[in-house]
Length: 307
Image (tube, rainbow, N blue to C red; front, side):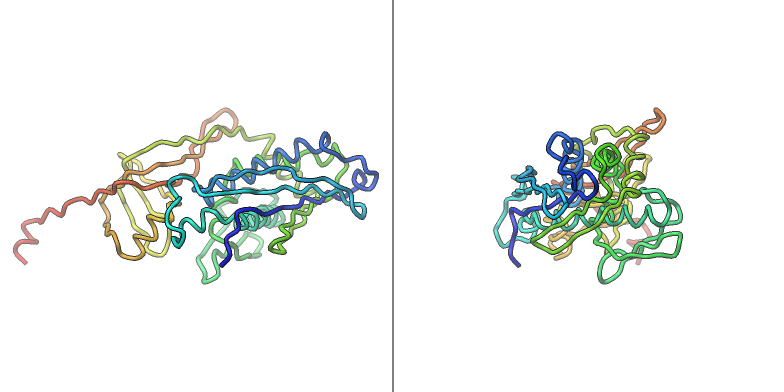
């Protein structure tokens, strides 16, 4: 499969402002900044081993629609620059995957808002693994099948807040709809003003802090063999965290290393932090990198020796 290190995403703004040709970089600066931040957040969640730059390449009005073209340029970070035939390196450099996954993530927010009125998941939302990805089932009975990384990103308040900024200026600039397109893949999504208002509410209500990134020694509590989300133990606390280290997972899946519950991992952990009503809340955790895994030595009991 061809590897993409550069691609474009088009943001097509439709409405009276576009038809009257009153849109430009000044009117859209907040919106474009929100999109750039949202893309960066998606990258952090789905492909953390990628360096990604986003720049506004062009702006033009065409057939009553104002189109802003953003170019994505990416490359793997140092720890992912391994042999060219390694799957982890290829995944870390595929910028088209970021564009397609980002559009799919916005689509999940849209579907959730249409079903519940809220961009964030509620207790009635159910998810199950399928051969094609993740089936997300909403409280109104609707369901969609999405990519696993896109669903993980759709639970990020930080990403929702950035999208709130991207869409929050709709009323002020008289835009009815934004269509997000990835021309290299053919993917596109319409986001009408009602969806934009729900995302803007997240921007108004939630304060997002910089993620906490630290190296921790974690004990494996539960290995989920069909998933990249394992349960870990840190002191008296137990939590689930998705492992984003593709090289580690590939070695684990190939049987090149062996673990059991109780073993420990040295890991770089990313923890989301938000404040709602002044109360700090720790959110999703992600294992960015695993290094120097330690297996707990087997200590036989008397019963084991008597078998």
